[in-house]
Amino acid sequence: MTELRGIYTLWLREVKRYLRDRARIISSFVQPLLWLGIFGSGIRFAGNQVPGNLSTQQFIFPGIIGQTLLFTSMFMGISVIWDKEFGFMKEILVSPISRFSVFLGKMFGDSTDAVIQGTIVFVLGLLLGLQLNPLMFLETLPIMILITFGLVSIGLTVASFMESLESFGVIQSFINLPLFFLSGAIFPIGAGVPTWLQVASSFNPLTYGVDALRTVILGNAWSPLHPLYYNLLIMCAFDVAMITIGTLAFSRRK
Image (cartoon, rainbow, N blue to C red; front, side, top):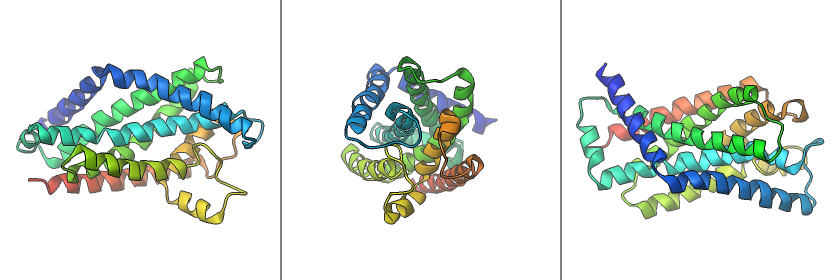
């Protein structure tokens, strides 16, 4: 019971801290609009083709959801550094709950924040005229959760080894950009793409998340790289691996 209470308390703390940060919530609206409006139009006028009869905005929309989840999830690791600087992390680690519960509480809280931002992007898709519906959102929600679990775990693990915000920012960008551009979020990974790029993207966990999002959101208009069940299995395996690594990283802290 103590473990569950500790997990819930840490989850609630992270969610409350996010909801009180108005600047971050406002950016949740602005950034996706820039990507969908400006970048999407830029791709179209540059003459790049998207598969089938999809518009550019339709094609990159699931990718922008994935991008939002990626950047938000990784950024959440900064909470660990803040907690270390203000001494809160030391108090958590000496509390009568296991390091596993500490990691799960922060991971669940940060994942909830990332999913909220992903949900905001989904709603923006309705405002942009994309054909979305509540049932599609309910099908998309578990995929967003699976994506965030693994990515948040990466951010928390990296932050557990960092001592400054500057160092974390550098490492975060070093990880984020390859994951994003190799995921197929803004251009299709398939025929016509260099072999080395296809191989690199196959080792990128976000590739499977974006492919799963497109499968659900675009339906028959999208030819998936892999079956939906395969994408989900890969993401589950990635989540288990990263949660395990993250728990070990927290267990080493004194």
